[in-house]
Length: 353
Image (cartoon, rainbow, N blue to C red; front, side, top):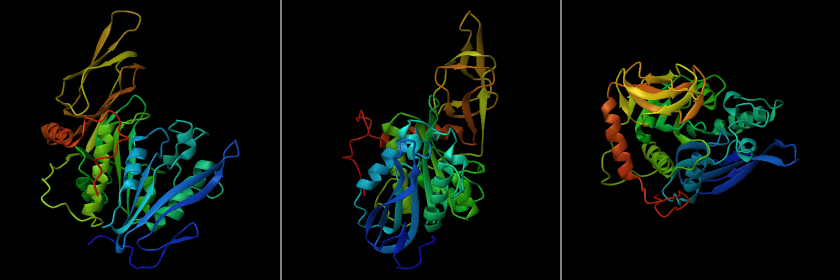
């Protein structure tokens, strides 16, 4: 039995009452930027007519990670007439960074290291405090949507803390090709979820600054699948059984043995064995070529694109799993479920409720 909100009392957010069956957009003031422009956290609340879990879905904690913004936008278009519980959606958490097309806040701080925040701290600390004390306090579960960094795409994956079995079940229900057990970083949004005993999962897919149809649709379907697991939406009848995500219980980076130009030689999702060639680092001023090889067997969950690198830079991110070849089957199944006819993900004619 999943945790429920427990009663039919109105949800009060920023002084506004939202009753069952209502849909409301709430603007919470955070502060002012250098232009004196008001920074607001725009929170969409959709309350079902029946009680159930209260799920928070967030995007753009890092301002240049925009796939999740489009996922939340699609969720906002759904009618959700059969919703049980409450859905809280924040399409852009970090508005100052989003406006600057940057991962970081204007003061170069990472919002995802500032939780639980402070009422009298920096702009980022105040934003983290609002998320913690005014939003998270109302929620029972969370999904935070991310991408890889610029020029470092990630294979679609879900991360969760192994200390929270419910988060592991959510990750499995989400249905990404890979699920990764990962430790919680101090000061992160997931850290405050864990401190309050509430499960949150992290989706990673694609890279910063680029809208990618495949990652967007996989994440969109993953949120709906998680909502069905939580009992917030009816389960689909006669739906084909999904392949189970492949579990990675540890990850590591293969790093540049020398500085130079990195020429990748393996794709995301590739299964590699110890000694396999992952790419080459070449001397930009000469003919020297240094191979980059896998130190262990695993699956590629992230990598650098063609890049100028220094010795020690991370080049290929791998995950260790006992079922490496199932990853390829999962990727093929995911590709069949995605609509690759779309050149751009703004078209929403394939939405489902």
